[in-house]
Image 1 (cartoon, rainbow, N blue to C red):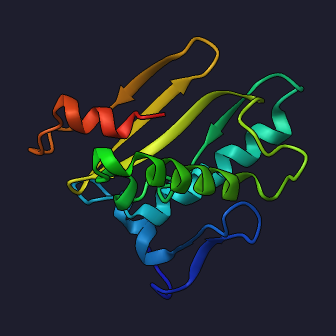
Image 2 (spheres, rainbow, N blue to C red):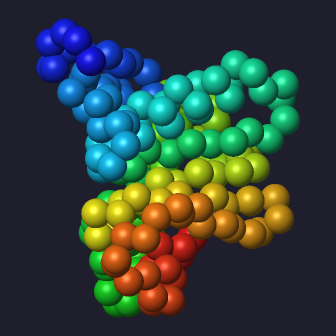
Length: 155
């Protein structure tokens, strides 16, 4: 990419204030680790497009990478209440732009990008059916045992 590597190529004040600089967009090249800001920017655009193309039905909600923080994912069993409160606060921050819609009642599919062990993947919850799917196309070398997945899918 030509131009100033620190120039913003995507920036918005709505949603979560997502922003991506030119240098981070280059992480979309093959064999590079995609920068979280790129994922967050795509999630922002997809969520916005969903709101303008949806005809009042249940929507798809694309969340940013900061929804599930390291503290939430690594919380111990005795910290579940704290974990839950932090997660709820993070969810509310996503919906703060629309005070009339501060719950997940309008969401059919919730897309959560996860970063664990420097490995990115996506968990999709179908809230209508009560099911979930993990989308992952790489062999990261990191172990994702049942306890780790249980922590990530506590909701």
